[in-house]
Image (cartoon, rainbow, N blue to C red):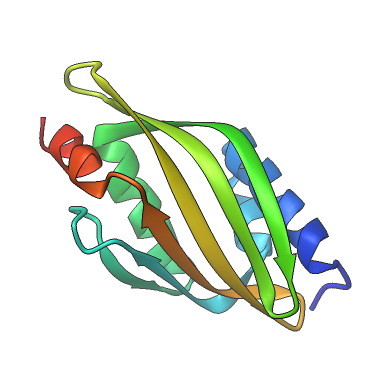
Amino acid sequence: MTTMTNTELAETMVAGMLEGNIEKLLGCMHPDVVVIEPSALPYGGEHHGHAGFGALLQQMSSRLELDVGAISVYDAPSGFAARMDATFKSRATGREVKTTVVEVDEVVDGLITRIDAYYKAPELVAALYAE
């Protein structure tokens, strides 16, 4: 358990994401975290625990590079929401798709227990993944 506020937890998670620091990311998450990606994506669905999150990152990064631009975090009593400008790049073709990703994260006892991700254009990211 950590004594960070939801905002501090979000900032730590974002820093871990921008640094590509998986240990920092996992340190923000409960061991039984549930990550939900849109079903329209090849890596969509529910991913459970630290192992599931790691497998999700591996599957996504096997075909796509992710660059995150501007991030806005919105605190809430039960967690936080984060809005991110994301650029996905195909490793096969180099083509890029820019979209917005919003996450709604639930926090219990200072750790993220649920991440629900919403992509503005999941069909474009899915097509890019298929290249």
